[in-house]
Image (cartoon, rainbow, N blue to C red; front, side, top):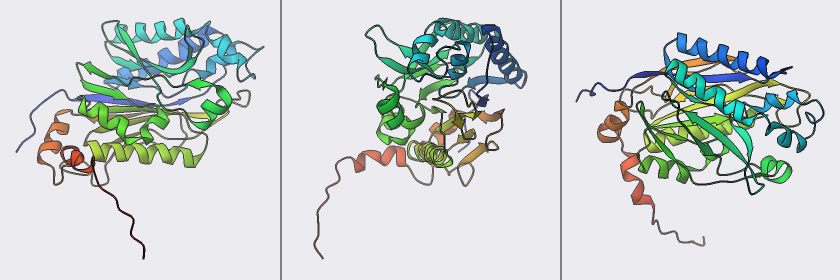
Length: 298
């Protein structure tokens, strides 16, 4: 059975660097340059990483090395950060996931928020659901459900921010709600951490028979107590079945180099592999929901 022609498009996943801006204009210029580059390559969906905003902490010298003070200082720039990505998405008629931001709510909690900006100038967000030990024990970043599925002209898209990708029931719920593509903005400071998220992303692609796209922050910022070391590479993954690569790796960037990773996405392949794949893990998942386990003494 042939695959029905559909909304084929190019995704750009950023290996976005930490940097040391001296003024807001430096931030705007860098992000704009990156967006223009990806648009020039035909990308319709641009994904920036988890905590891709943290270089803004460098704008406030008095708090840039203060793990908690920098969050308060960054609230002065948060609307400009969101508005920049909204404007770029609208100007270039693309979808952009902005680098996630430590966003303080009216109740005083701070969440890890990624804004998803659409070509028509609208935007919504996904907050991270499960915090790492660093976020919860040292940084006081709060969990903030619910998870969402964004119904776009490119397909139905979900976001699992970094550690969220390591918990299969979250992605499963989003895919049951229609998600064909899962975006994984990430920030990891060890090679082991990068591989945990990578393995999680590939597992979610296998289980749900969908695309998963990882975008990491890379580089070093000795001045920052939050993003001083950043390790990773961007990846685009699918299920290893029916027209997808045998290892499930559609594209993989070189480790730690600032660049865009590009790949072609065809959401019609998701429906095709779920229906006609050699195996059907997405369809057969309910068979595992009530598995009985007994203990046997030997």
